[in-house]
Structure formats: structure tokens, C-alpha cells
Image 1 (cartoon, helix red, strand yellow):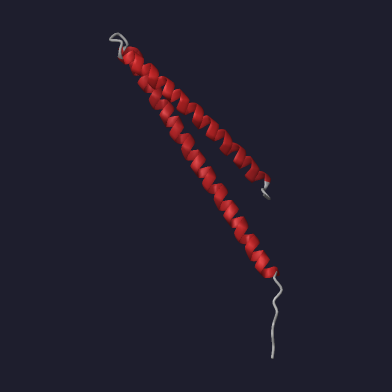
Image 2 (image 1 turned 180 degrees about the vertical axis):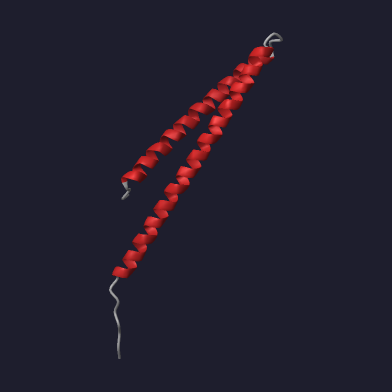
Length: 102
């Protein structure tokens, strides 16, 4: 690939966002398990509300992370597509044309 430094940087950011999303998803699962455990405890009402709020915050973070990934991936695809179109156009312009006269 002939990636520009900006594109390499964007792929690195995209990779980091994937890791962040995975970590958030694991945190949500952990919090959900804690909430399930507290739900069985009749005295855990205060704790369960805090867990619900934490889960909500984590899900919001996750959604924001996924949106960043989607936007970044779309930008990268668009840049790559534009670069390929430009290369194709340049290649067409550099093809020698043969004129046949009779």
C-alpha cells in the first residue's frame, strides 16, 4: 500500500478505538453481572441505582466510540477511493494512443 502518513496515523487511531470499544464492552458486561448479583439482594437498592447509571454511562461511551470508528473508517475509505480514482485517471492519460489511418 502507498499510504500517506496521515492515513497511517488514522489507521492507528482506528485500531486504538477498536481496543477502547472492546474494553468498554467488557466493562458493561462486568457491571451488568454486578447488577444482576445486586438484584438478588433486597438491600442493594442504592448500589443497583449506581450500577444502572454506570452502565448507562459506559454504553454512551461505547456508542460514541463506535460512531468515531464508523466516521474514521468512512473517511479512510473515501480517501482510498479518491486516491485510486486519481491513479486510474493518471494511468489512462499515460496510455499511448495509437491512431490508425488508412
